Structure formats: structure tokens, C-alpha cells
Amino acid sequence: MEITVKMTAEEFLEFVAWGKDRDYYKSRLEKELEKRGLLAKKTCWAIDEDPKKTGKVKIIDQDHAAELLEMAKDYLT
Image 1: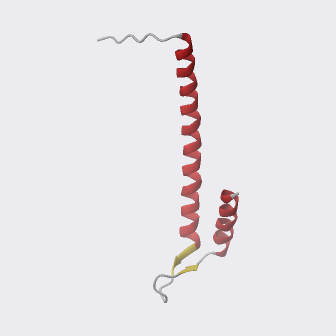
Image 2: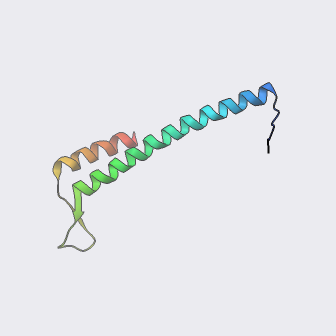
Image 3: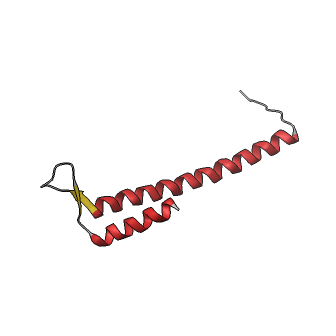
């Protein structure tokens, strides 16, 4: 079964633009998800549950905590 789609030149240009936009936003989304994943990993490396205080956390790695803080500041600006 063959499907034939007829579109005007304007519709074709809109379709091409849509494809470019889709690729652009897919790339942006992937980069954003990578950043969030790295923030999550660094959080796990930097803090842990405090066994002495229920519901509290403590910094277990100062270097990762400092990197995490810097990343968070950059992310929010």
C-alpha cells in the first residue's frame, strides 16, 4: 500500500522547519537531562542520610558539595 501526500511549497517549508525545530529541541532536552543527571549524581556523592538524626542529611564529601553548589548556582542563573 502506497500513501501519497501532496503539499504545497509553503506546507513543505513548514514541515522542514518543524523537523529542524524537533531536532533542536530534542538535542536541548538531552543536554538538560544530562545536567540534571549529573546534579543528582553529585548530590548522592556529596550528602547522605545522617544515621543519628532521622530525616536529616549530612555532607560527606566537601569537594563534591562545593561542585554541586557551584553547578546549582550556574543552573539557576
